[in-house]
Length: 278
Length: 286
Image (cartoon, rainbow over all chains, first blue to last red; front, side, top):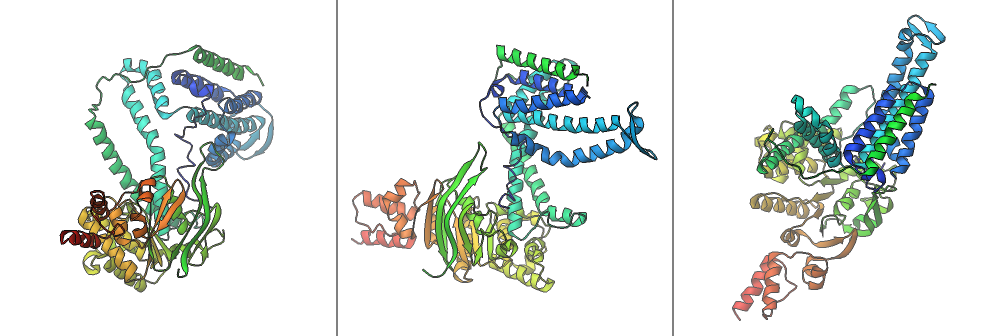
């Protein structure tokens, strides 16, 4: 109950938990590449054992980075409805498309086979794994490091005129302002609650009413967002930011042995996840 | 002291308890505010003022300790929060941000409507609240909110809380960011609410001139504790307290201390501008 309005403190995106572990100290370029490889492997892997192995790796990741596991678990909570809806759709409709496997149940176009059950379980596991990995990544990397790393990794795309710098700036700003707006929203909710507003107390099927209940927060939040955007533009322009002009960089990264090692371990783990045949 | 309307006993609060980012904002805070009093809470950023005042209307619940406001026990999980929030009007910093309706009158009517009052009474309350903050009901109620000046917006926001007819008004830096004239006017309105309408007023401020002018009692917070409390006369007249807690002084007190340091004999317990003027006159006339 007392945590009713504690929004900004519960948002894990963009939250950085400095524990100083070896994962925290990795070169962000290598860290991003390693995590990308692992996530790719998880996305491809369709086997039970492979996914269980990947899940174990993800959980091990938390202990190596010295981040309490409940941070990862709290990231899963909001995703549960999606996982359930996805699982239902897959269970109902995938059997029709899937080839092979034993059919357990058939009724009209609904066909539940061992293949569709596999897909349901595997994609639920994938979801959890990806959330775990991205939680570890964001909790162990400050947003500045994250965007610097990304900008460097995408660097080669500049050759095909991809606006790498603008892109990474957009991402930086977006991530940077998530906690800020969460704080603004928290303040707004508290202010309106002080005048008698109630949130999320109406019956869930009265969607119109529940949406209307949110207006006293949404409208001021838009206002604040727009004026903050204006301030940001001014602040950037007074410091001579010019879109598209060449810029030098303040931070330089130099890869160390452990960065190469981390990359090698990730490749090995990814290969293992994919090589497991069951 | 008269019957306390706000009573806080041994209140502690830890943010993000049980995580590596845990941070204790309040340590065993106790304070009492009598009905009809006007008290100021001062202290530096991060001293726990905002955390404390959010306990007054149940936005935060005591983790340990007790908060009782006008007979409502905030620590009781079954307390009627809605009704508590009608007793305690909380006005946040920059409250003009919370205005969301197109027309002034509608925005002020939001709270009373949420209380489920009949239209006639809502209208009455809006009129009452608007006149209290110095906005003419007939003239202003159908004006768009976006066309207002900063000072007027703040009045609208204040009226939006007053329309709940609270017994206790809690204000977080009510005059921050206002121009001198609006500041002056708002202070007079708050004083009027306290003296004439009998509202208990608790306000947080960094402006010592304001504190000297409004407050009957001052609580000084430092590092999540109440470092000391007293009348403005006691606080501003005690240089040790001022120095220890890095409290600024109203200009009227500054002048007296400067005169004192130059060797003039002045009464250091004076703190109101009029008193200071009287002291200076006394010196001039020898």
